[in-house]
Image (cartoon, rainbow over all chains, first blue to last red; front, side, top):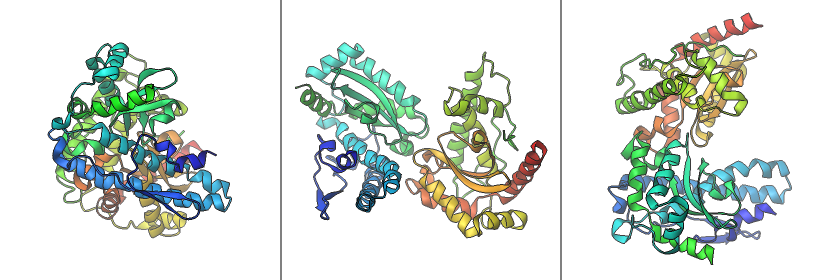
Length: 231
Length: 215
């Protein structure tokens, strides 16, 4: 049943759930905020330390907290058999679970320059990008344009369609994970274009944020995911 | 179809009815400079470019909004048109030394339709706090009743068949410089210190006239 999949480890394959624990006899997991693999200031000047700290400690933490609450409520709704109550929780699960999933990927999509942030992808992902988009510059241009065009809040993604074996660029609204655009889509790189991701530094100039974020994109991680999914 | 009220400026960026620093310390001058000076201005400028040479060119703003809402299947100009309207309505929803409890007929109607001002306050707060992502919360009037409505992105009560009376912008750009992630604090500050109940009352009067004349 779909609801059990939401709470299962399988859906979050590829993410290292460093700390989650089972509570209750139904085995509903409690999720916790993953640590960043770098200091808050390590992505400067592309993304300010102030933004990284608030983004991680406040925004992502809130998604985690609210996701846990929603799962607990879901557990109760399921056990009491209230279908309306179960259905009513779906948007809270999508918002907050999606927020947790997306941000967990995002922190891995970023790396300090001295740890390879911004270094172009090599190997099979690099070739696939050239094949599908002509060049890395072509991909960057497309993603930046689509990211700038998102109205309201959302994300722009580079994904792999596992079934069709091709790279795709797509956007999602709010905290919808990429999988909501296609069940066979695996996120490789996601860029948060919610205003909270850039406003303190770039204000209304989202295109400037999108120009600079590429300097800290961690292509090594994207390549790892790509190679794993292709084998 | 609800008539638009108060906001009639077509593709003109009207300044707020107060200086950009007049809402301090509740809403900073810096916020107004960006929110009005950049975001609102861009919606107006981009709308002008977008309708140029199309059959929307020269049409009143509320006409463009309703046409491009297209029953929810949004056409390209909707975002800029509705946001131009929404922001002018937002500036006029606030005033220096505003906020607090309304009085007179408006208070009576709030008490009638929400059982108390406190209940209205709670409901408006909750709507503004739980509008996920970008959007707006509204006090609106329809069928002789006041109600609280929340809308995503650029959607507003005009396209939902009711008269907007009050709004709070809950796009992150509206509060991020002053409150960062603390949207609930921003909403409380708006309610306690910024709302122009005079504007709301005037809009309510206009809405009643407009509803009775179309009845």
